[in-house]
Length: 561
Ligand SMILES: [Zn+2]
Image (cartoon, rainbow, N blue to C red; front, top):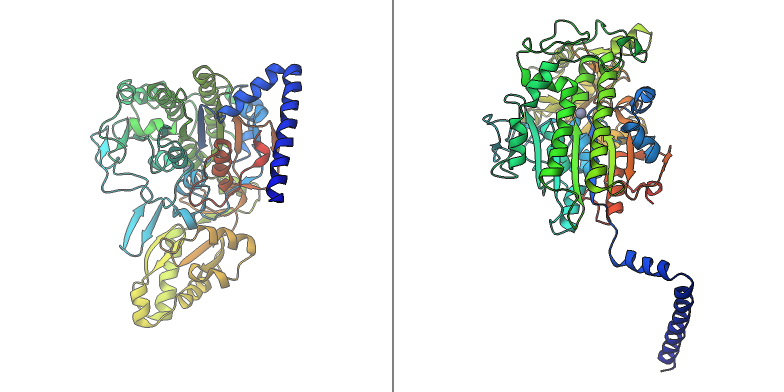
């Protein structure tokens, strides 16, 4: 009884004290008190989140071309937003599908299942493309194969899914990218829509997974026939070519050629010569520009950012990946594509200011992986790099296995520098995976460019440094990964001679931008080690929603106001 009485006493004293404080405060700061009441009545939310992934954007591009960027694009994010300058992928196979999935799931391939753009399914004994779905049909084009896509192979939810769940599916979430996987994986399983590009017809398309027919605004966009127009314009450098001092001379022997081009030099006149005009636009600034144009058309067409709940637009710019692969990070083509992307971003941000009102939207920008400099460029300057001949490796592996175990088809598939073994043959011949792995290792270790060969089925006992071991563990999925992993030396890529590649566990492939800007974002930067898996939980914290189902990252607290 006494305890109850005391509690009541405390409550009544407390409420009297509060009353008295309220009385004084309301005399001193009446409007302040009012404002506080209003702001707490409704949970503050941005009108819109815009996630931007630049395909193959390495961290250093923020600064190598900084002096030439406009005020409204990358510089606006860097100088008015929050910059995580030491942001990394923390898994080994750094490619497009894995990257886009990791950004939006806050997870790793070992959990979300996106171990590569392709893999081999040992249970169905078939190769799998990351977003393939034979039950889905093309919407928006006569090309039947381009739309057989959906996010069904993604094993966890995305931050876009979690926003949809949190708002009882009132939030609109749309994914846009030239590449199907760049649009589909970010938008998640519950997406309002995802749109990607059909290089056969020049149309933006979707699949029956999302809808039965294109919305009118997409059909109207396709009717503008922008790809043909961009190809007709050709590609000249934005600035006089002598000003591209950050890059090597325009014509290097290790550069690939654009479709329809006779030499890898500016200016490119591609109209008429390009056999595949709708594909050619993807290797020109027009690929980025039409992606930005469709993003703006989506905001207008779906009235995104104007409703009572937050909407989410996920845009991925795929063209820089094509340019990077063909010409490398130190080419004039690469520098020019980033100077022009900067202008496209500036235009997008200016539109967002007018559309939602400045400060009412949140943007983040990152990349799905980095890239190695062209090995030929490194070799010119006595740096350690080189090319691995995949065909030659296969021959050596086959010979070694036949010599050790007798003739037989021991390897059923090789994807992502992994060998998938023929387990029924191994059982029949009573050969262990360890024995095969040791044989392959012994045969390949003497070769230049091969750092190691490990058995992915016994990673816990692998004799590998702890740094790489963690990256390979995070990448290995029990049902989708191969049995044996070939690990390259830093700087070495499997490649046919021109251009470059990514997909390694090394710094140049893992270190990518992560910049936040706008509503709810503090101004500043950190050099603390952050990971790609931190992006989704950071956005989830901003929106006060649950992070995705496979999240392993943590919110970047310093970035949030
Ligand atoms: Zn990519």
